[in-house]
Length: 435
Image (cartoon, rainbow, N blue to C red; front, side, top):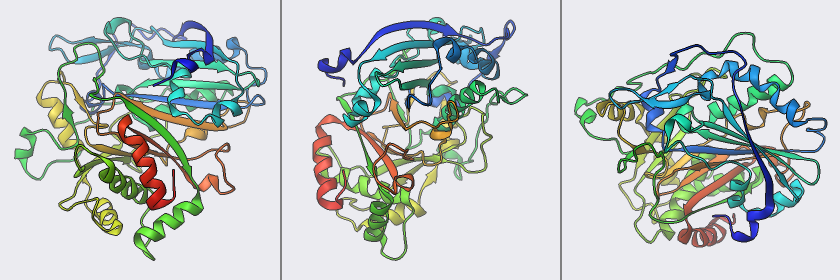
């Protein structure tokens, strides 16, 4: 939550909209897949920071001009939701556009990043949701914030129903290509609905909800879930050297992969500080290599698995927890889609935070967005609309992250109930010498 002292850091807000340069046509609709609809209460908020050299000569007009061509490739992101006669949501591709926000900040980018306050991200990216009036709710917001140093941040607010973080990254990277007049000649393929990606071994599983999702009370046309407690984000950088040491501490000579290593540390640490209950089931989200075409928007190429422990995680040896994560993750995408289909696409679910959720964004091309040939100095992503069990994101670092070996380290962002954050930081420092 942003404190009242910081609310005036960003000011002079201006709103506008930009849509495709070509008329899409009448009565064009896009039907989200079952996996898309399973994600409809979640939102991605990404912020890209650029130096003054990268944005030199970029006026608002110059920023907006290529968007008309860029959005021709992604016309359905400019549409608005409606409901079919059965109540299932669909996107009417009516070219209403993405919402553009212009703002100013009296701090430099270095000063902003030195505050190291993840909650301030909300000032640089829209926190709008879809609804309560579906026909008037944009699915994408872009906020351009000018800093005192001449640098700029670009905030992407992305309705997860459009696609996962890898899709969002490809989407915004293509805007960079449009800025450099390097767009592909042919439009991006419209995502196709898919069903039963992973067939369950036992058909009786189709009658019950999988472990990875939580059915919430109906939200109607106001697409957000309500938490039972305040959620607080915090981020920190783990260098390559630290990561190697953590891997050795967990599994000795047989190195656990970096992502599973971090999952082990946070699962065990959160289990030790969580006063409500010890999380026995976790959800793991990661990219499915080889199944994704660059530029295509989809929620179906992110593997969503669950891992269940039949022992006390907080008392276990770290290597046993790591082995469980590496060897016993169960892909539940087919079961998730079956649950959505069973209710005709009208029920409301959450995935992130239904269980303690680990999200692997190591392969996301966050630093693929270039302006004037220069990459962002820093990129941060958060997920909104998560459940009370919390989320841990693992992402690649950037040039502004400290340490000579920063390019091979990781940025970890944790979103948990605020009453767990201080205890978790203490636990991580005491047991693992991080955070």
